[in-house]
Length: 301
Image (cartoon, rainbow, N blue to C red; front, side):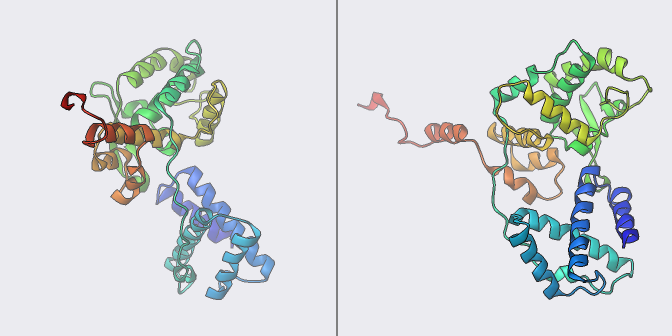
């Protein structure tokens, strides 16, 4: 069984171009499922629909997983079994009979403008790592990049004249993202100072760790945790939260949904529609500006 799992993970990495973080999540979900089968004396080759119903009960009642987590696990296992069918290991995908659970609808968490300003001021620009960290924050917010896309950016991917970056996204699809003045300023400082000191191995990758190697997705998350610890903000931070902020602020300022879809690299508009929420302040502003009886016109009296 281990052979099939490893081959599937290689398939996700080299053919589907999934990020290391996503692959690790898939691996954990599959191994948890296999451990359950072993506990129940079941085989992945002969598991039936009714067995999967009991597995759902196990996740819900014993593991106390929420619907979103369970749905993610089912998606990982559905993909794994589809792979096994394609490889002629199985003749049918039993997980295709199992529907996903209704997800709890949650609005994407994002930073307010003033919170971002405090974040950006946290890194020490006198140090190479501080310059890197400032650029990391600026670029995540300015471009809406996924963390897996960010760590793969090379200096040669950047068109400094037009301020565009060539990015390889999900499914090995290429797109350009644009960055503005603040990000350009941080990029210039880093490349002409901190990057030269960190780049002992003559790497072409933009974001390097303190040993001169390319920073990992886990390394980026560690950096963000260290940055927010230097602020007064009482919020959890993640690369995706900066991506959420990028999309939310674009929409709040009047950008259309199709443009945001292209900037985020979403294949379907439905994936972008989670960002159709707007902040309470923006709702209030639009209401008082647009609704004719929101404010009294004293000139009529």
